[in-house]
Image 1 (cartoon, rainbow, N blue to C red):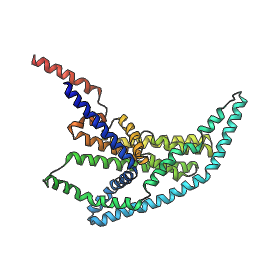
Image 2 (image 1 turned 180 degrees about the vertical axis):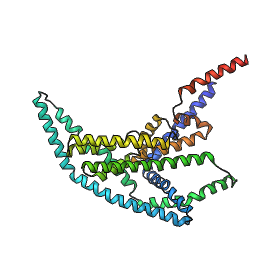
Image 3 (image 1 turned 45 degrees about the horizontal axis):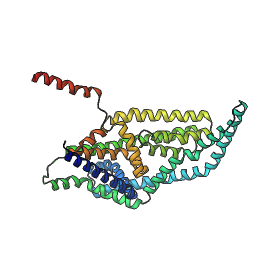
Image 4 (image 1 turned 90 degrees about the vertical axis):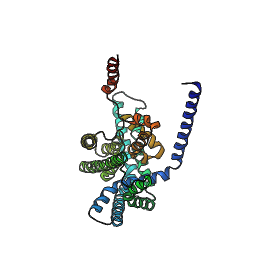
Length: 363
């Protein structure tokens, strides 16, 4: 590479970096608008399977779309009313829980004093076992979703128009390309993967939330509906979502009922998440995501910082979309390779051996 080519390559990298900074800044500034659009697309993806089922039953498209959107609105209003009442009741009881945990920590300090252990350990325990601090992230997540759903009229109007365009969009795309019979296997496979992920993840999250709510209700933990709903939401967040969802109800079980019930609550979370998350979900999805473990974790941080709680929930579909866009361009194909799953060690060693074999033949 000559000095001039090296200089042009450096300038190009600087331009790309500057454009990336501008795009990230723009996404951050337009967060409220983009979050509403992403929520609309998310609801539209979940509404597409029942829409196609109604169309298969020969229900007119407009009527089918209106039925699907109406069912979404009714479900959201019912869940919002029930969960909203649980949230209000929880924050009403929070001072009592705070007083109870302070009493338990004080008794623990007295126990340590009888063993000759003194100092600031009790204050440290009070600071790190404060239920208000433990609930902070969960409360922020609920607040973020509440603000995202604050403009429900605009969101559901957008969902309605997206569902109406579902059938006609491929026809429009073929018309633009000048071939009414052209097929798009890569794009179709990508859309199917996104829909498959969202539908399976929603069903798994719903089952997880219901089972956790039932288990906490059997144990006698307060507000099982609230904790089931929080588990349902946070189950979308990869890697750390289930841990964050488990912390508040386990702490509440310890404060309210004691150490044994807290252990039973922990066991319930472990069993439900292992069976549904590690066994059933893995068997249904397999490795169809095409993303490495590191990329999944980093996408959680990046999209969460850019778009808030909604970005954390939708980090996997957003990263899959980015990977699809990069792998269909020669200049950005290397990015899709980096975002892809880990390459097996055997595949790395095969290439030099094959090269050496060809060299021997040529000799």
